[in-house]
Image 1 (tube, rainbow, N blue to C red):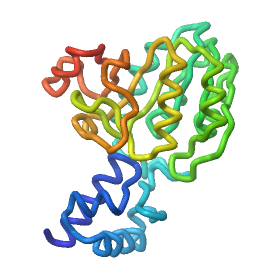
Image 2: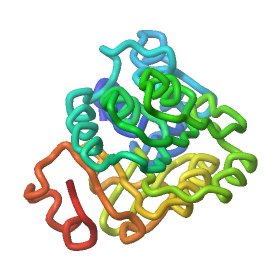
Image 3: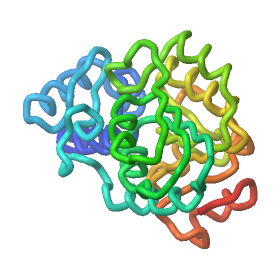
Length: 247
């Protein structure tokens, strides 16, 4: 594979999953980690990605980000429009972080009267613009990669609340492997969030369907709604509709 092809693949993976590890890229590309590191350094120097210890981040996931940097922004807006339909007055809602969740927060109508718990400072700030919403930010160690609060303190707080609806973004989702991620601390928080909720919504752009990471958040049947940018009648969603409600 030519260097240009490798780097195009790397950028695609980073845009889809927000963060990639050098070790994972090495396996997928069948090249040495030194080669991957050189590619990441070149991409970072050209301003296309953000290099971090052990891998790289998408520019669209790093605060402060420009609106133009957000990957698949229109698809994420379409997902947000569908998710908003699930919100009702007097609900207690628990939400995660990420660029799709920020789009949801921006679309919450001013008239909605409900309570939000979140692990994301950025989402909390967006929701704070709504006068009829009560917001509780669950505190802990701030992850520099995902920009959500993580750690035992957050998991403990989550064990003490029960919510009507949990809304989460995902790095990967598939029929076979369910919802997966690549960050151990984030996985523990997401597990605790799902456990706290009566119903769980997973949001995913269509490009992430059928992909998987090396850590399991939950099986597909543990969630109630899968929300994508596709029509529920799309052939790509046929297998998912057999297991859960697809919007």
